Length: 382
Image (cartoon, rainbow, N blue to C red):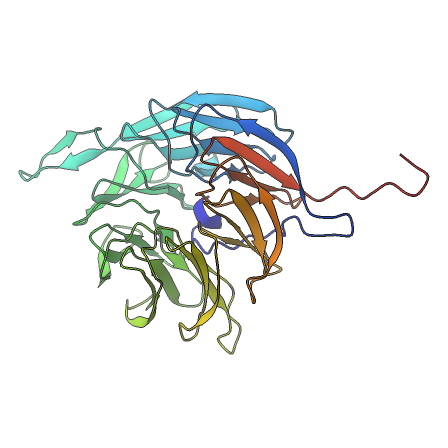
């Protein structure tokens, strides 16, 4: 799921490839698609990686690097897929498309299970089908079988499967905002959902019925998706160049940190201990990745890379950059632990599987698998 779960913390449960006596990590395989890739890889439990592409296909690539299937989405796909088994159904992918459709696709077969073409509420209060704007927002799939996704200026809660409160593909509720929703909603697991808009507002709503709880207004649009740290704070970046830290219950501002340019990437929040130590990582269009202290919003370090980072359980920060390098960084100092040159800029997040293999995709349309370096053979052996 986008940003490693419903909280969007950007934290992975699995350690990625590391520097060993054998050397730096290496490329296990690459798979070339027919377009550009802006979505982040989604991993299934069997090791299959799913990625949307601007060529109009969603690709399912097996752990071996062999294509499993291609799903025709009817237009470019830039959102990241959510994956799960809603209400006992088989494993399903949920992602938005450029044709304004929310697709539900069988992860096993790459076939459509259902599609939802979003309606738009007109001034006369009547619903009409409208599918002219793309869905950029990445879906979030809750355990109760509801898919949450932004489309145009509304946040939708859609029944993912019959038995989740309605028939599959039907709307449970929707909430109209005043700005376009391009980021993914985050859920706190306690009945609250958070979503930002390009008018600069971060909304907190009730998950069960879409009721309003609070709203915070930034000084610029929120393309970035919010991240919850699990400790009562929500973080979001803005095109006004600020990273905001808010109280997740009330929306009160704890602090804001200013970068030198607009923030489009989504923050990642490391675990805070009892003293408040912990860091929030965010990339800015000034070509820097910032590590900001979670307790007071002061700068800890900054390095020259940019995209949405992922944090391993050992504290290593994995992030791609427009300079075509993928980096593994020390979370305290920003020092480069290893880097790998790719065939194009990297604008999306990475994913790490349970075996420590890392996956990322490039603007050039290539999916990469990165694995540990192979130890050299014993002396006397080839």
